[in-house]
Length: 307
Image (cartoon, rainbow, N blue to C red):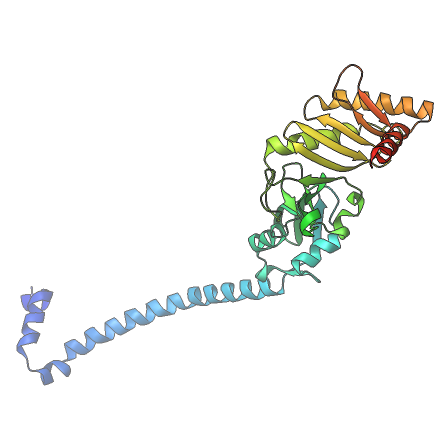
């Protein structure tokens, strides 16, 4: 058996022997050349094997990007909870004129754009692949107009709407054309310090107003004429003006019962063909009624007594 050279079988010893050689000898060593060739071949095979994978990844990414930029959402599903803002009006708010591009679709930003409109309480937008965009909005429902009572003195007659939660928002005739005959509640500083969009009137202060509007809607305009103005001179008291000019004094409790008494009094006035100037419906028995004729006589008597 041919004896083996242990220095050629032990890698560490071979490397030690190579280090003992000069740099020139090491550079032109056949052993170093073969080792370098093996390493180069190994890396070449690795690169050759990885090339299809790298190309596949590059192609997939490039295809996905091109597909995204070419993919548009042509169908837009639109739902307005209360039907106040039309589809075209919502699209105008979003700045959408044509199809929506998937690559530039920003659902959160679109929701924020809609909710930035103070007439909209909430908005939900979601994309449903491959080609549908769902848009849902919840508009604020006007309950009454609100205006600062001090405006009659200051000249600031700014008027806004209040929703059922007491939130103040602007009047937009394009959205609220069916609410332009709503009554006006004249606010005291205790109700609201500043009349601005987004301000909220406390529940305890707006509750009687909402109950009054809801209870009056149960009657026809023949039974109880439309309410035009609402004042709260005191925390417990409301004064409302009807469309026929009658002034009604109420308290902020038992509103349904008071409106029932008001309906009966108005019915009696229609039968007797009498016009009423003012009514106090707070007493459950014998409510106070001042007819227009009596009020005129009282006014004339005061004028005659004036020297």
